[in-house]
Image (cartoon, rainbow, N blue to C red; front, side, top):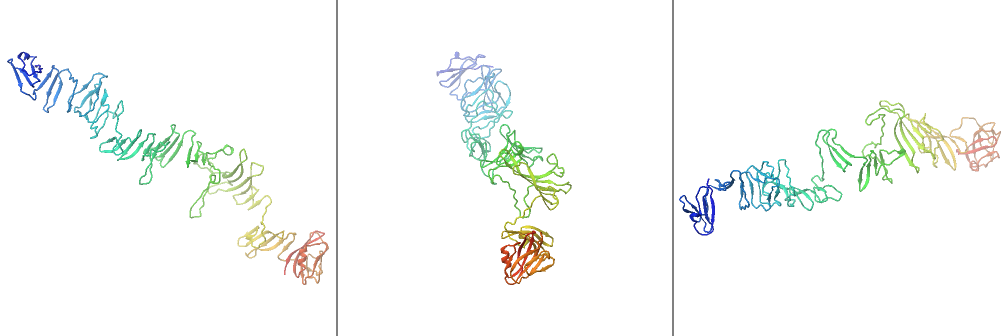
Length: 638
């Protein structure tokens, strides 16, 4: 192969024959740059001009120092190819069109070698072959694509570059950056424009109004269909569905409205084997909100959990309304408090007035059913199992306590117990009522209703419907006697289909009497006997005995007990042969206003004497103490 050596001539002159040689290995060309002429020496040693004002030079190959070949192909491309083990070295390359590399490109051969591009790529850098090496590792990495016309700052400053399908960073087509594991690693920041909600800075082809943009300093926002779907504010608040950014202290905000009129957030575990969704609160799992999934063990279940001694508290209007402490005790309006015997009841209603310390069970239904407060007792030792109770077992109790200055002391108790041996559909029961006496701290039973319906007052084993150990008082509260039984204050005895009978007391004129009434034929009760304030027994019907007539107003108690007297004039009531304990009755008929007086041993009121001194018929009763005879007037009979 012959080497061609170019020589420049800067003057308009034809080279001399001695200037050129055509010897093997030393053939030369002379180029006159002044008049754009090229000369060579032919085989006869004559200098000849190769063309006048040539616009091109057509050769098949140009060889430089035997190492580099410049050749052309059918597509008009100029190729630089190293010949043998040499390299193509370009110290400065300026191109206004494009550069195409069809072979392997190796830049550097040590770990410190770098590829640096410090200017703007104003055209396209195209890789059409499958492989290239950048860096010292020598690995072959298949990549295709090109860098577009966008400005990259800094463009490249690395020993390793891995690129897959990089296209149109100017935004005209799709783009992606990845290595073989799908991760792009860069030593410095990748800078994007801020973008807008309708044109996000980071997006994808075919859906350019969906992506990530940066609406403010230290704020990341996510657009969906040209509308903001979520943002993370400079305060670290995640705002879903809005742009307000929440308030101080909030971490997650879900806002806005939809067609259903509400916004919601969901954590959904679709596992079908004991799966659940959990929201953890606090750095040490201080609070856990857990919901069930489709697994049978967790379906439709909501669980609140806390760790350690942390309680669950519920607030409204910035005020605590309920608390469940670490032992499972529930306090309404506050933390559960220690009560009697250092016990903390499982449910407490705490308050400072009637409204905050009152519990109610209300029922609203158009029927006769009532609201219920129920207690249950089983002798089983574990929750959810049942064992039959025994006689004497308590099944419910209601105790009232008062604070005595140092501790809570029971004041009264209503207790329900099993009152006999229970069995299938057989549960005998009793209710007892107990109070604490003044000066005491222990309860004493005062009354019970047993399983047979007997009521005992100060009696623990009543044998009748009412069994009282002590004095019973029945008060009239100032009422007057009335023969209608239902309006009396007393003892009313009623037999089925036989009407009423009763014993009642009444007050009249400052004196108290006791009346007895019976019923005949089922009608209203009628008074049959009365014991007046003087102790006289007065009967509505005469006692079946002999009545002695004595008209002189002097009655011999040895002769009879009952007398009829029709005086013919005035006189004194006199009794002879007075016997202690003797009683009787006198029918006095005063036909003419005869004045009636009393002997010294006859004790009668002036009111009574004035009454019987008037014309009329009167019923007098008397009682003797052995010295005096006491007379009472029951009123006019006719």
